Image (cartoon, rainbow, N blue to C red; front, side):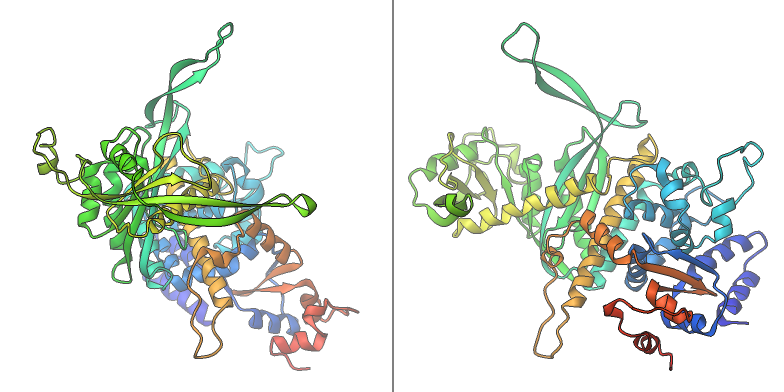
Length: 562
């Protein structure tokens, strides 16, 4: 009996009666381990192949699952439990991995899963299902009524949606927080961190159970009238708040709230949760936020936490108007650069100029301070806490019609361009998280039309986005690992990805793996080029692709003698 079979038998003996199937299923998905050399030797010796499939999306999973194991995330997935569920035909871990696959592969709808995921034997076997389960299902339920349409996969899409949506908010937040903690411990988050916090609306139909509601206004054209008319309308749904590290684009903390909730009340809790996740390995030093968090008491609490914040003020704020007035008589810091327009003979150059003014110790932000102090702001002798500001007097030769944008900060403004450039990082969360999250990650395509479905899908999407980004950064860093003692490891940054987004990354993997197959042999699997498979199975082949070398090179690569 092999070591794997011995471990399996011992586990089954130790399990109580009625738990055997669960233990077996848990072991089954664990036993699928990659061992190219072992499988190559078996193929060369003529051993019978268990299964063989085209690689397709499985190529995306192979190294990714190995990364999850190395980081420790796979063990966290094993610990996931469905609350108030006592008996299950399929272990929770496999529901978790199936939904992870759904998000990772970019499946837009639950209805397409039987066709694009559940019927993909290579993917299903990697997460613990066998060919018989994929072809015949786990039960015979509904077989008598089935006439022409064959079964597709071990479970139905509805079964996956129903069970994965049983995970509550506490469990999903634990999963995301554990991911951040593990990535930090793995060395992917370290040192001083510049964070960005923002929220994005997740609109849904009114029929979604438990959705929030917010009233908004819009201008509409009315037939027969020249001027548009303002009308009220309601938006239903939720809002997701995400705090990220702008350098790596890795999420640090998140919160899902009803769409009408005020975002500012989660500013401090999210910062505290993120710092708790980072532990002693990293420290948030600066946070950039938008106007949705302009509550003076919250900002003062951030100041008391020892963090620097940068936020844009609103035009009707007294401190903004004071800063704009004072900036007119101050000397500006200037930055000039040359911008090229057009191409070839029509190309022109323009020198653009940006002027900023830094102002210190403004005291007219009445709500900035502790609650015990700010409630006295109506008194004549009230003096508010000091805050600094940076006023944009001119931006790339354009003079604002009003007094200009004003950045409020508790950090130094001796060089106002530091504050100006720091706030520019906020665009990362809008473009790199929310826009990419809605496509190609399909953040708005929920498994069920209720709060539970939205909650699980949002957390899973941000979780998989974070793990995928971490995996790609880790791969890029390993590819640039220093070869000599005098060199240093490249700093971890999204720039290592070379501007390649998720959609292009998936396409590249499909191109790289289209001539590869996955072969299951016993308890192991191997991934081979079609030409390598031909050599290992003694099929004569006249010419191999040049990167593979000669047949002898192929054999030597797997430790097989002539």
